[in-house]
Length: 165
Image (cartoon, rainbow, N blue to C red; front, side, top):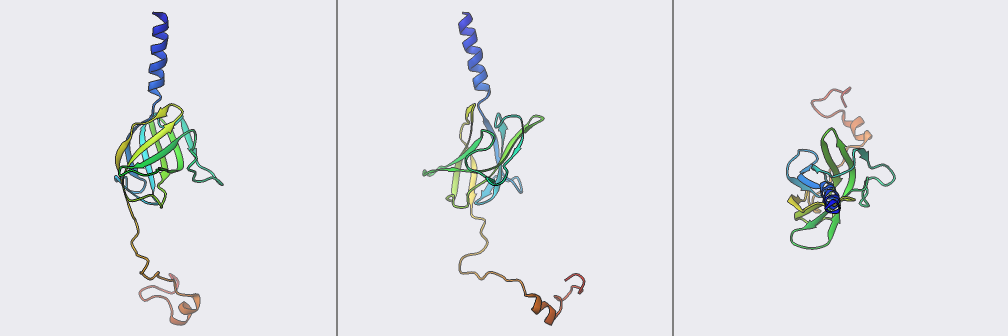
């Protein structure tokens, strides 16, 4: 009986460390839509060890994991697993969140997000809809800044004073 209780206590302790995702949001507006190449935030429980650990140069950001944590994304439509580029892990004062960058070459569509730690792998969290944040197409022209010579010849842009230019 004593062995059974010890085993159950260890099993409960192991389960308590399994990460659990409660939300996945874009890092700028905290909406559920995340664009390719954008920072996103994963919130939840047991996502990382205590403390704040940012990714540092020269490996910033990294897909190899950070502070013993990795974020993976699997397209709902199937395909290869995408590893997010880790930016930081944060677990202080009851707040546990991770920040990462969605690779710009990730396919468009819905993804199952998972957090992998030494305590295990979270259940899939399917709310992230990836989309292209591109506002221009390859056929569009890229705007250019006027040269210093052009500004000197033509003066500052209309409506601005010379000191503001």
